[in-house]
Image (cartoon, rainbow, N blue to C red; front, side):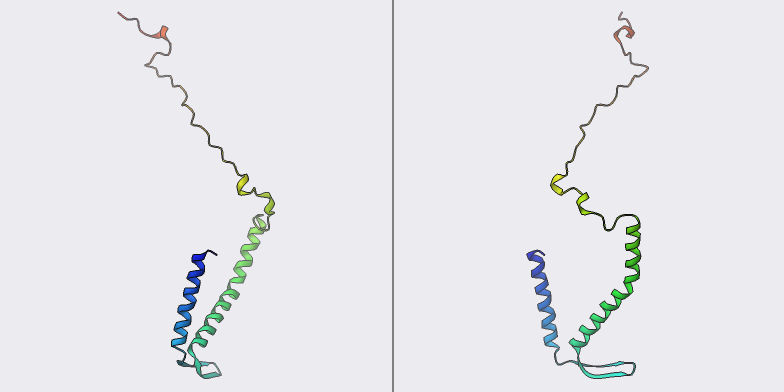
Length: 120
């Protein structure tokens, strides 16, 4: 990660920590089915809900991910040997020089001096 990325990550973490600190006295009630919780810190509740959402998304995406990997393996695009690809320094690029267009015979233009009309 670049220095700029680390700076942005630390800045975002500080902003989130400041908001959580300012709301440290906020409490919420949570009722999920037969489970009832009272006076749960809001920051803890939001963090738990966020992590549960990420876990649910991971579990829901696993079948599609497995299907995609099977398709890639079937076409030989996954688990390929990385030594088969040339390194970036070994790549050479050849640029073809532009070639002259082929000569075109036009019916109204003589192609040899003998075919040219006689001068008066």
